[in-house]
Image 1 (cartoon, rainbow, N blue to C red):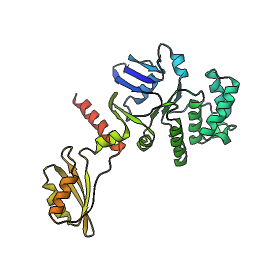
Image 2: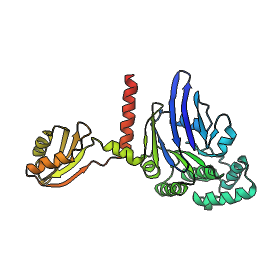
Image 3: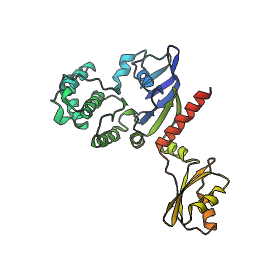
Length: 316
């Protein structure tokens, strides 16, 4: 549904996006992540046809966003990071205006405005002036605008910005409802939200894709060589001496908890330390009451992938 082929963007002497390639099939929800300055917003603008690439191409449902921009944009519902709204209009007036831009008949507009207002929690605010709404409700208006013409593709840039926790939960439910019916590209700095909502994640740093996969796959990569948490009936010194002697252990950080000691044990490589740690402490006669991998998160993988890219970029 969305195909980016070798997208490149130069701003004068500055390379903002380098050889961006990915494909998002119909009905998939994809999180698009990147730190500030990574080229994320530039990539989104090229994908939506608002910014011409220096090289490469992007198609939406087979339509080239540059050579047939109008047809491609009809297939896209776009929510920019800074939601562009006419604050002097009422909510329903603004949505009627957006519908006319997409060539929708009045009958279509009335039907869809009622539907998207209900989906986005705006039914009781339809007659209110946008400028009088809270930031969270303005964000809801932007999401409603993106959904209005029933596009097959939704590109949402920081859609939960300004939403309170209850509104964020409602947005998560909305994304779950859209899954399978729309292809959704979701850009956000709130990694737990992406982790819960996305089928797949693309991470961009330094203008290049540095990782992609399902949240579970990325968490699994983050867990390789990750720390082990162990709690045993031993002193901190005993734990340190015993565990530091394991060849694949890089570091032991003990913490005394009454007669018990909890230690965070880091590996030198991708070794799973649970077996060696359990065997060492058991043979030494120490009772173990907890042994687990330090729970990996998408946030950890994101930080590691971005740091690795920054290191490689600095070395080149």
